[in-house]
Amino acid sequence: MRHQLFIDGRFVDAESGETLATLNPHDNATLADVALAGKADVDRAVAAAQRAFPAWSRMAAADRGRILLKLADLIDAHTEELAQLESLDTGHPIRDTRRLDVPRTAGCFRYFGGMADKFQGETIPVEAGFLNYTLREPVGVVGQIVPWNFPLMFTSWKMAPALAAGNCIVMKPSEITPLSSLRIAELMAEAGLPPGVVNMVPGLGHVVGQYIAEHPGIAKVAFTGSTATGRRIVQASAGNLKKVQLELGGKGANIVFDDAFLPAAIHGSAFAIFHNQGQACIAGSRLMLHEKIADAFLEQFIPLAQSIRLGNPLDDATEMGPLTSALHRERVLNYVEIAKGEGGELLAGGKSPSGELAHGCYVEPTVVRAKSWRDRVAQEEVFGPFVTVLTFKDDEEAMQIANGTDYGLGSGLWTRDLQRAHKVARELHAGMVWINSYKRVNPGSPFGGVGQSGYGREMGFDAMREYTQVKSVWVNVDAQVPPHFVR
Ligand code: NAD
Image (cartoon, rainbow, N blue to C red; front, top):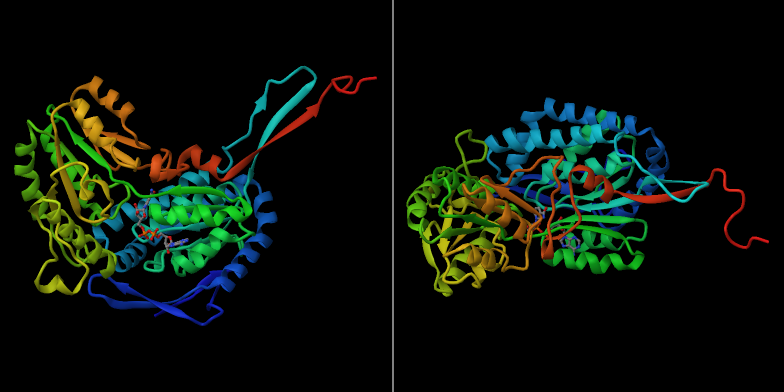
């Protein structure tokens, strides 16, 4: 199978004619050859977006919204096809892509379809004789760069608010997982999105991603990916002082206090780290246990981790699929060696499964007890089915450990003490906190981080603010004379 770039409403080859194979991580077989965009293709995409911008940004907001609502319905109607495509390309179990990824993608387009004509400016009570109001204007052509861990869902998180606000888009999906985004582009055309409003240029990060971040025709770049790449994007964006929005890495603290309801905390903590093979920026990758309940917790948590069914993502029974690439599997397994080198104790997993799954990018659910919260496995993002266990003796120590990383994305806590729950939620250095749950997301609820987890927010009204700039308009309604230079 062969896929092309999507520029100006049409599927086209890369100008260079180059392609890149996208692989099925279950067995590393080639799924499709995808046109590999280069700088010339980004230039074409930016030019198309610039041409489309005047009409798209002036279209009635409700009409833009209607197209997004139609797209959401089309996504629902293609649930099975999109779920299969996403499972094949990423390794997500089909039960998750059907139940979570596809409905959440449709839900996000639907939410922002409804938002388009509800996001409004203000009138400001200024001095007598003047009317002052604000307009929320789209930024222009927006570059969007997304990673491979939730490619389908991230097309909606990034594109839905940008489009609702009237921007045009040049999106670079990850070179590893471009298939579902390209299919969404096709459905967008079917939903009536005018040519050039959305352009898809799958290509290599250091070439196409870098060029998008540098491009003088792009007014804003929104990026989801690693902190290291985020830093490069900020530097590359300096040329034309782009607006930058960054959703970066995390090392989520998942804190279980001694008064927690353990059955819920155990299952919630397993979901927090093992869902999507741990390839989630908000994964609860630091499992922090109060020392009084640590043994009782692990006695049940470890067998639960070991019982997770690994297998072909297309199999309904599979609970955990492969990691998304062989290179990433090696990175994750390398952290097992790092853990051992630091004196960590391997409590479960730590290897790839043998037998039928040995040819794929699989890693067993891995539980490691670190010696210190300062160890690399307690500080660095592994981004795999790898959880680091730490213990604490009281709330104060819990906060010191939880806030003791450079990251600040998602955190969770399990307790039955209402006062403690809200106090800890306030003190956590994080953009999102879950109390007695983990990894909840909703298109209405702000999503993003603090510290080296980035800046800016996706979702909700905050996302609309990110994708607009405010203009203040002054009108002399009855002032007799302007206040200066009065003669
Ligand atoms: P990555 O930074 O390597 O790549 C992300 C995207 O950036 C890809 O499309 C890649 O091609 C592109 N890219 C690479 N180098 C680039 C450059 N120099 N200039 C511009 N673009 C470039 O990250 P990844 O390995 O694909 O994804 C995993 C990372 O993403 C993890 O750190 C994870 O925490 C993070 N992530 C964050 C969020 C969030 O919302 N905060 C969500 C998901 C993933």
